[in-house]
Image (cartoon, rainbow, N blue to C red; front, side, top):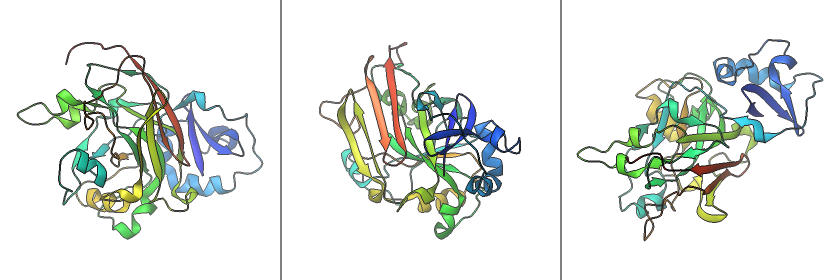
Length: 283
């Protein structure tokens, strides 16, 4: 199953058409995409056989974040072996975890406003939680995932690494620093949801390319670890980590500039395109 948030309304994608879920279900399910995760199991059963429904051709230019108002947003650092190497860090024993504040969540085609000249890109597979998860085992973890989408963990590196204590959550939570979308695909849409290709380009130039098979902590391990400490709630997001090729790991370092177009993708999910706009102020 694939769903999309079109201008604030939940749609089911079928045969290239966008089906308005609220109308097609006779009002049974909400039009608000943020509300569907609280009734996810019921919605999935309905979506398997929604009846004779139709809709206009899918227009992804209207797409917004698939989970627009998550209660919790988790980020995982150093989770690809090659990215840990380019960061000059050993592979971690436990998933390095930070939070992105939910106010940073944006749509797949929204502009990224640059607060400084040291803003970096990090393409990521993002999972959306579909059931409350507490003390979930890795073997059961995928059952608690509503779906997979594309994300960028945009990072202001000065704030992120400011001494005496790094401020990951602040450096990664400026407005618009969490674009996600354009669609959400359920795990059963993939032959192997633990082996997905992802990457990003700037102005058409490849910057990152990787596969989730290179994750140090795959999605099931992340859910087991996080749910053993906190309750994961329907609609929550987990940014699962970024492959190698980020800007600060280059020689010389490279950062996003006004006018850059950042294209991000996960094969089988879709592409995001974000335009970078002028530096607002010094950090």
